[in-house]
Image 1 (cartoon, rainbow, N blue to C red):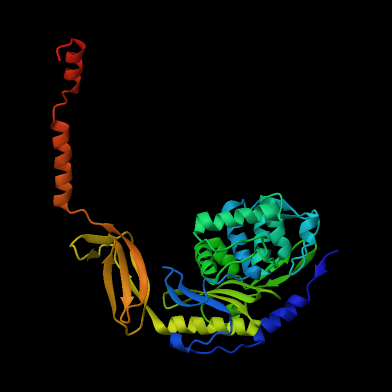
Image 2: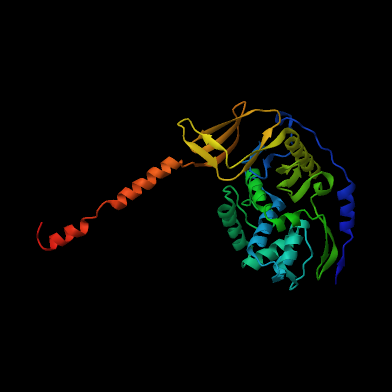
Length: 370
């Protein structure tokens, strides 16, 4: 029997009309957050703009689904039909009310996972790729290490239900989210406010659980979460004036305070920083006179009305604020000057022009001349 969703309409009403208060902050020193851990980064460069306990291991709850979602999009065939198992229908928590033996496209499962936070969709996706959640979680851990480069996270399931060994950090989750938001389809899904859902067991309109898609100008996604042990977790991306930010808050006491902290972080980022761009044709010289250049054009954020210094250290461009704190490090390529290139070429030609007498000596040895 198909269910007609009434709760989503009530949820949507509360989602859109229940306001939250944003604390406006214009200085890092003024930021007072309820969340136990947080980070704000430039989504383009990965530059850290603010952090609080960002390397502390904490339970992520449903923001785990960011990993599951991007893996499904990148590694699966989204048109494949997935047959839902009994195990998937029995996962507790938020759901899209999948039925046993229901046949559903992988793409729809990803939408149910990321928009409505369906735990059953997460298990169905895991079983599509692997025999069970445990095998899929092992792949999740390998994936975030090898593909994204994070090293301080461990996942034991695809949905984020509490497990003592299921953890991440605000820093890792910011890197994971930065990676995921570079995928256009992922970005579209997590930025979808509402979606008509037609399943064998449920027909309704899904409303994205991330309230700031409605409440904060420029928000583009991505995911919220909650378990009693993890508290309220939230990952948010936003764009204004060519600045792209990602904010992560972990273990906030309430949903309201998670959104308030995120609003304060985004306000701080947009109010405090402006974009500067360096061309890949720009030359830099270290103290020894060696010249370097960027591999690509570089955009980064600088506090408004603040001068910065640029130094070359061991082939890295180091950009610092006036107080000496580092804004950004970027790898450079050494510039090979034409005369240096000519010397290398000439040296190679000299080596090639030298007569090779080894074969003559070998023949003479055969005849015992030497």
